Length: 233
Image 1 (cartoon, rainbow, N blue to C red):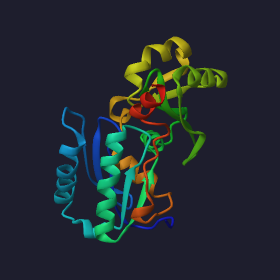
Image 2 (image 1 turned 120 degrees about the vertical axis):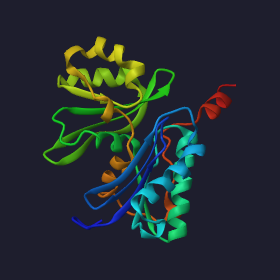
Image 3 (image 1 turned 90 degrees about the vertical axis):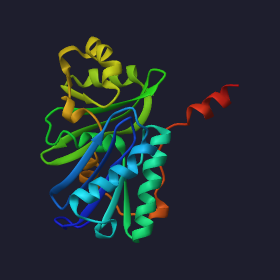
Image 4 (image 1 turned 60 degrees about the vertical axis):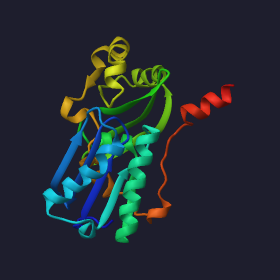
């Protein structure tokens, strides 16, 4: 995507319990909706997307680029989000961009001076994690997305001896362990920046390569629980 190019983007994130949809036009956020409640993504996503379009006074045909978080995260949630956005891109004959969920989370904290450490609960004491840091206005990937025990992440961060800001749905699960291990080096994102936001997916999408709808696939980082249990039998 060319620098400074103005285009309308529909972005969606369903990688966790949070569902979010947003429409941006260049540097302008037109509309965003975020829902973190008991309803499933299969119940909420399409009505949410329709509301975002209605409030923006736009239709899918007005969109130049479709963007979606394509993992890691909930296997079911990712499938719902990716399939929905691929269908829209296909119907409108427009390009699509897949954005790593952890990268999108890092964009919740623009120009943060600390190490940015998104953590998503992957169960069994493991997290989906990557490490980022801003250099002026450029977000750099220090460590690529991976799935591993949280203790390994904390040992790695402790060796850097720098302030680290944590965010993501792994924070409430592991906050006490993080504080015990890192002490004052650990900082936690505020509520408004802690969870997935479709507007951050859209921002990250601006610097990603465009794909055709059929080229995009989820990036799970590890096998599903059902696959692991089958292998253990």
